[in-house]
Length: 351
Image 1: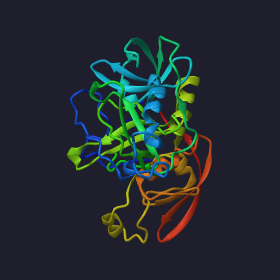
Image 2: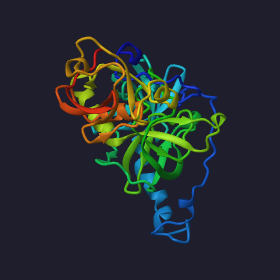
Image 3: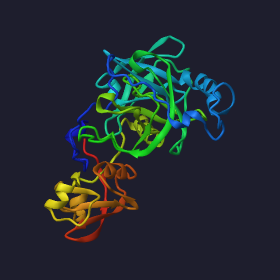
């Protein structure tokens, strides 16, 4: 399934830079930039990294989780992965494995083992691999989102440097990468971190100081775009929900609305004489779609899905991830100066 072949309710702008962590060696490398949190924490106010406190525990933390992180060799490219369960299942990014069905996994002990790609899910950019070995130590995944400012560690294989470790904080939640294109619907509702992320980190671990995986590293904005340590990870709850579905029957369900939406720019607001300045404007409504059945029209501005406010197209995508096919939600739309509530029963995303 290709994201460009389905109507997700998303028509985003064209990417002006490389968003994903490319899997080919030789891409841009970001230098880790210390954030203010690295000079002291509530447990270590003086920033002493030689002993106790959060930073003092990092070597033990890395040693404990490192065996659960692998390098994924897929054709000429490479990325990272995390052991998901005791059956030898590894989770990584869909863009790491691409169309490959047979890959090789580099383990923390320096050995390699073959792996078979079981399933991929492009809307979340996740893939699952079955390793030939069943004795790989499974990582522990967090059930909730991390708080902003929490210390996190990224482990992966940037540019092929296996078992590389970088540290930073959770810089933001619910992030949508600016300009994310229609063909990259996974680049929404992400964790932002200033832990250095580079090509090859894709699919690797972002973990907290308890050793739990809070995210699977997915993308970064390169320095060429003027960025300094802007990395992004898929939240652990999204990972576990999607992977469990993929392991159950090879597919993951995603709520389908059936609209093509665009950004509500100042130019659009002025041209259409709108009195709302935040939301996602409906550019087209698919025939017989859930949106059409609910009475949604071209020109409507979606401002909320249930209790979640929508301030952008990416925000709309993120809000839809909270629902499954068959779920019903009240969508708030602005039309002709009025705010209306439309009850939508979501369908299954077409393949």
